[in-house]
Image (cartoon, rainbow, N blue to C red; front, side, top):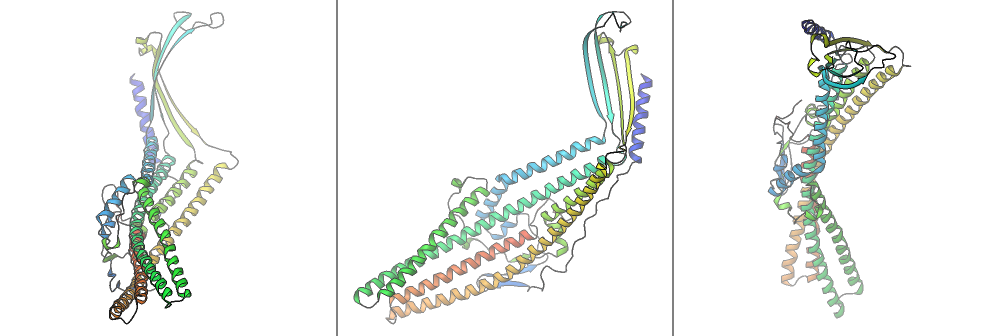
Length: 492
């Protein structure tokens, strides 16, 4: 008994020394080099972006992006919708399950760093072939029951880092899933925000279109009266009928978009379309953020979760090169067993019935028609592919930010022009109303002025919605305000 324990101690010591002397073969991971431009756009944009009535936005380099960044739009209804989507969206649930699966795979692989033990008990009833074999038992019994119990321990020392590289690969996959989850959260919140803005825009456009239809209908009635009295021609009536038909034709399309938009919002929140509820968003209750976050390109690679996910794919591929190389090197296995065997259950572990085994093996592939060599080369090619894809994701992220910066600058100017057009149309309408009251113009001129004002209003609504949407797009392009599970803002 003492000999066996001493032998086990020596075995554990030898294993520990073997592990400590080992090294993880293959490349140690390094982040691939990426372009580092001084700024996102070709030329420096102004310090502010604004319009007369649309509000002024200012670039603020120190403005941190909150984790609940959608609150900058000042809508409680929007906040509630985003929170519901984050809590009930099935795609997000699937991403969280994928992350848990990846984390469990890491934990399972880490277990290979330690010995595995199995405890077994095997009773059997036997009869010896007396005519051919000598009795198995010293008692010479032909029939007997044999009880065998043993503890088996096996261990594969990680001499060349096969397990370490495998764990590194799985951990990179888990981190990739974590960043994909954060990217899904960011994308989901942005989709809810954009859907709410679209609903507000469509409602305003439908309201303006209905006003235009009412004005066109009144104009047509006036022309019919004038035609009966001989003051208007059939051509005037036909032209007005065509204008009314065009206005009516635009309405069903807007209504269809609004209903489909409501269906989308319900599904994003994890509901069925029939649970969409009443309309709840309008432009007057959505606030344009005054302060816009401004990041430098070097920060983007550490802020955007999709970029970080692509980087972890490179890390995974790098570790897989080490796995492929370690598989070409000798594999060491240590095993042992300690137990007892007897015809009586209570005598299995008496001195004469105890057995133990210590064994070690080393295997080395000497000929496989180049299979392991080509697997290593394939892993090295996969690493090059992942590095190239990572650089492509980074370049796409730079483009995404640059596009949204240009869009916001253009939106401000477009909204300013739409404001001017709406004000001019409103002034024309006011003057026409006064002239109509004094008898200088007829009702048809007033109706035409009303139509022009409502068309200008629709253009302004579209420009206002575009500015809100592109503001959300900028926050999304910069990576949003995501945090890890401890609540700490991730920075690198």
